[in-house]
Length: 314
Image 1 (tube, rainbow, N blue to C red):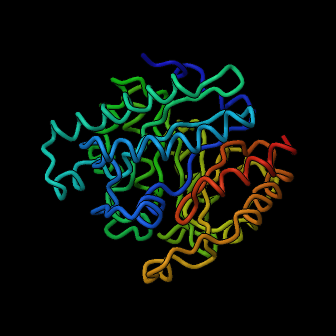
Image 2: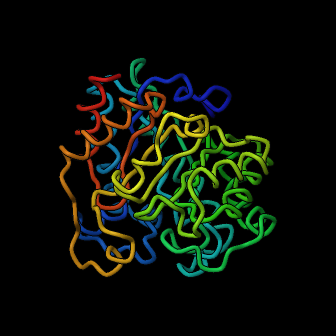
């Protein structure tokens, strides 16, 4: 049964953490191969489920220890139709594992949630293509059709919302937002940005947010920025009207570009303590940004440093 769908607690300005770079953590730290970066596939086995439980538990425990909220983001970034086919999933099996991922997070919420640390569950939806490269850009209608299946499945579960992670272009973000709206489930849109702060498709972050709001009637609950180092987008986050729509950051640990990261053979974890201070500096300017986690190269150490740095400013 959904708990927060009608009133998302992160909209009340208290500080919320979320997890780090789940794919890079499991590949580089746990030594597990993830075809197509499909973390959800681990739920098929007892061992894989145990790895995921340990991963989420480390992050949720940090939030609870610091009296902060925590968003339980499902491991379903690759659990949409095209990627499911590549992994050998039938449509019904893919729907089942999306549902299973939310049920899995329900058990974790029961274990870790407290009155001081509310834990909404989010169904993660990734792009149809690559999270770094927009590739062929769908029409808004095509994007809505593509993402509606996963959004509708999440709407039948205990998920409180869906979060679109690593959106690379406006059309896909618009279509996905409309799919979530039709499924009557809240949606947050998180855009990938390059080292110059622009989307991979070339638009300014401001242009993307204003376009999605304009074409969907301000439907997203909020926006996020992800998959870039804080120094790549920090200059865009100034105190102006459009940045009020941004509530979340899931940054990369590395200062490298996406092209450089694609060629990398070793994980660049950056400096977790510095990372936390960079988040603190953003919150010092824009205190409404209150959903904080990581993306590529980050893990529980980065999230803990975010908590320590930003809790003091909360």
